Length: 139
DNA sequence: GCCAACGTTGGC
DNA sequence: GCCAACGTTGGC
Image (cartoon, rainbow, N blue to C red; front, side, top):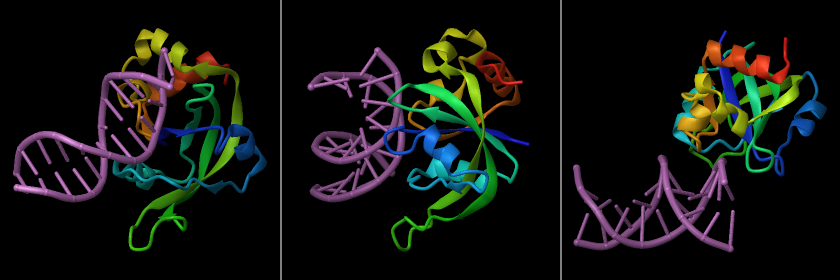
């Protein structure tokens, strides 16, 4: 199983909205960056991803699961094959892990969140995943 | 094919 | 609100 991190501005799509979307999940649309798109295409059903609130909050607030693998983005311009995956909220972090927390943890200094701060869909290593879960109070 | 100009993202 | 980083566009 692979791990990821996806970013959203809570003003446009928040963790609460993701939770309300339920177990069936919802499409993660609007990705218009090729690196991010490639990451979406690599996701497999059952993969987990951290849900990060950018701009407002700047913290990892929950964990989502891939419930449907990449397929064409219905919101994309015609002729441009952007993709979406479907995510369902799985569990919240008991204690959100902020960007500041990540930066303060030497073991997380290589996280894509810091190194490629503008990338909206990023891979997370198994070690990073475990540590962030621990910091966030997730078993 | 290079590079300047411009737009967007996201932290501060 | 500002600015740095990065991607994209368009002139040459």
